[in-house]
Length: 460
Image (cartoon, rainbow, N blue to C red; front, side):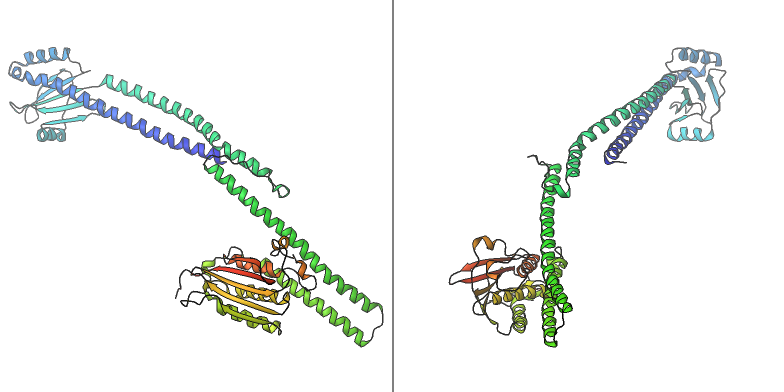
């Protein structure tokens, strides 16, 4: 069952419930009104007998004749009148041929309430009244023929109105639901035309402020993100394949050369050392690729522990010096911390250590004096970590691409690498809701600045 049919069916169902409740309510209200009105008419007719109660002392024939005369002009269909004494014994009845017996419970109710009404099995309505003058009991009865005929007609009218209203409601429901879902239908058709090869296609968005345009805008934004992801994936796969192919081809050529001729032990060792270097490069490249691909972009920062940036920096410097014994790393504070939490952030320690280690390595490899100056400062809400080295500065056209995987600037021609270090840095910093920027400053100094948000509060 599609959504349009379901909405139309639900709307029709709920309207049918409202119509059914309304029709039943109208019918029972009319029935209540009919009963009360007929009771009043029966009571009015009975009151006429109350007004002539003095005639009941005359002979039986005279009383019967008077009652018959009154009944002749009665407006109640098939009216019947019975007069009882205070004990419930019959004194008079009209018509004479009527068979009548009063149940003890009804008699008791009449005496206690002075006026009591009830229905018989054949829908005759009775009302019993205690006469004030002599405590005699007057019982009047009649059949509401006109009222029952009207009730029957009203019942038929309500049934036909209910059926007709349901048919009209169903038609209008399907029509309006179809009209309401028309923008969604067009949106679905446009989405269906969007494919992997056609991610540039966008859904038209109008100036109207409604849910359909919100969906269209969100879908277009999703296409933008998917397009960037696919482009990154294509570029990543292409460059990864290219970078892996080079050392593999070198290893293969060296192996074939070694197998193709007789070599001395020294020559074999030289080939093996060369193969070992190529293998180490492949391991480093593979680890870098795995690092970029495995980190979860959706990891929640607020679940990370509190870290002191200066302590993470000291660990990164220590690790870097083990890798590069000639490294000269100087760390200083641009602003002295006013409190212990001025340089505290929420983060992943291993990721931040990888960020700082890669930046130190990058500054060391592309410096002219193997020296890196690290400056840590804070403005109270944001923490800045500057990595400065003296070396060849990047031209403007290369600055925009240095965070792209496998991109290497013109100053990297004589340095081994894969162009993945800064890509890893950018990815990890972005995960921490921070930024990484490159700025060339005076005296041929290159500066990379990592900006991180200070933790809002220290949790114990």
